[in-house]
Image (cartoon, rainbow, N blue to C red; front, side, top):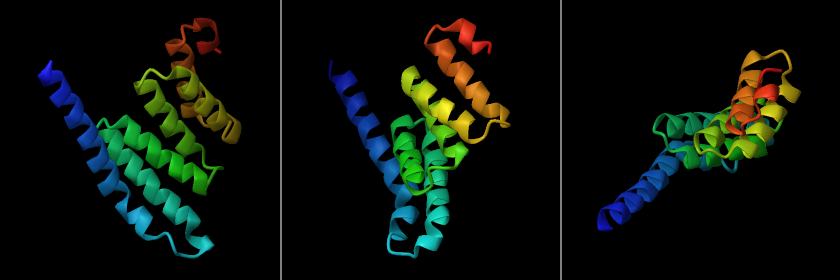
Length: 130
């Protein structure tokens, strides 16, 4: 069906445009000092949030993954990427990120919520309650 093909092409183009514009600021900073790594990671966080808001979950995953490469100790990056994976029904990946989030910040309730959501998506209702 041509309308499905056109819609798919539109979704791919939307993803590329969203990620390009949302992450443009972060990529321009490539040559700055290592002291600015956390700031660059925050730019990718904002890019990811923009993509998530536009329901471009693949673009958001790319942005959050870049943030994690720069700062792998920030629990929010894993939490947000977990939500993206869950939105795409990739619950194993959502669970992996949720577990990392909880490991990094065990006193943050949202991490446990992400983990429970992933367990629910996997049909593991018992572990979702823990």
